Image (tube, rainbow, N blue to C red; front, side, top):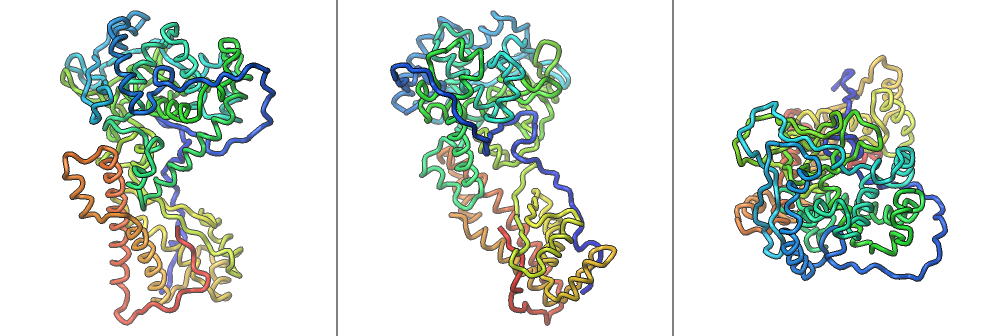
Length: 512
């Protein structure tokens, strides 16, 4: 069966890597260039106690109870977050803070931003002055230092988390005390009252068995650990931090587990602003996420305007309705990892299939050249978008067919052709499709549950929230994999009835 120039049709990836700027973005520096650590000044070691009242987010569950009691006693004295903001420059706005009960009675209710009156699309819901927005420019006191540190050492999240942890140590003396108190209440929980899986136990992570997200969680946790090990350097280099806290060396003041909790809390609410300086692009905005819910089909974004960050709604709201914002074109795996929720209606949802040319193939270099000539790599990532599984399979096939070419004369024909021409017999086509079908079957078999079992779990109204969001994620992944498998089987059925799969090609591409 002759294949024309579609053999290696280039399809440009529409999917962003994790570090791509988004309207609401959580960025972690997974690979950090390390430099020699500066010498620490001598001081008596006085390891900071990680009690719940001294950490950005509460620690153990026993500590949570004590933390709630402290919060309730202080609530009357300081008022709620919105009252504090109005006292410090927030102009009149069209939102209120409401609360919903947490699934865990040991945790305080979750606050959320709701319309205080009927709103129409285009209305300004609120406008937070820059004096109430936390950015690296404010934290590090120097835009050049901010750019240097986040380019060479740490993510913006690590710097912001470190700053808020220092501020929390100041207690009521900190200007940001009411905002930090609100972050403590939220505990990094998303709109479904679930913390990022970065904070889940090993047993809870098992809910994600079979999903690549489980490995992503572990990799993210390792990245946070590497950033923690660089905190002391930041403290020395950032003049404002050094001057404010000259004797509080970060890794002595804050245990890693506390830093990780703070990191996740900041991760759940950081906003990526457009058209601002690098030192202001990542911002913590009171009244922003996680008080604002995320929705994939929303287009409202927090936007930097003169002297403020404002929200213009994209749809009408009735008074009392929760206000939503866009979280960027992120798949559900990233929504769960960053914010602790899964969006069933996420049109940006996707899974990844990685294919690689066999490096042991004697014709590997020639195949690599042909692949590059047609916009593909020797290790190629294919993105399978929800609802476009058939198109994704069609995009993979030319690449896989190239890998199956074994006759040197056939390879020379591919190389010398004006456009790539893969001479693939029906039997070889069957081998390609069989490999692809086997790959999808293997991935589906790697999950701990079937689709029908997932449906039964989700029908239980008392299902643990962490298990619910994990089940939602793996269920949606399985549906995409199943659709890919169906598309592959349909192509097999279109082959001549006598077609059988030959022995596997010795240098077939590898699928991961």
